[in-house]
Length: 163
Image (cartoon, rainbow, N blue to C red; front, side, top):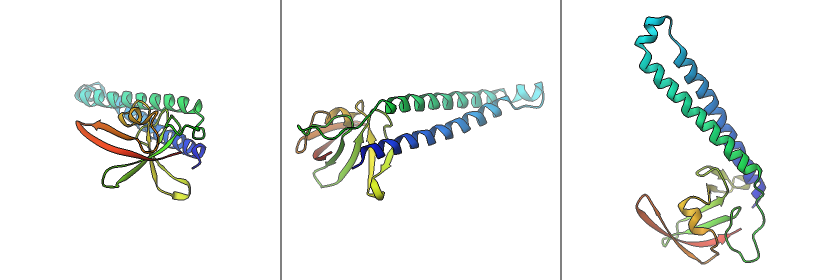
């Protein structure tokens, strides 16, 4: 699978999310400043504060996006190592005991973003090394079992494929 293309797709998705955040930030900032006169502004002070907080939240979202892009700009996903162990840049498939599988791309940033495989071939979820699943799989190889606790529930999976 073309990991460079996946990384490019991830960057494009993050840029798209940042664009939405910038538009929402400006809209919220404009709404916070609206008000025809001093009396209206006093009456709408609570609403103005809420819009101001929303604008600040969107600004933080844009900053997180910039940080993610900076991390991805330094990232070059490589080929699988000879030892076959999972590392940042690996594509990993896991299955539970019922045969239900998930495929993810272990990247330095972009957790939770859904990527489309080449030619629309399946979905991959981005997982970071700091996530519970990322921590569990780093250093593992095909055939290893992992247990991950998410929201108080333990999930058991087997690593069935690594690229």
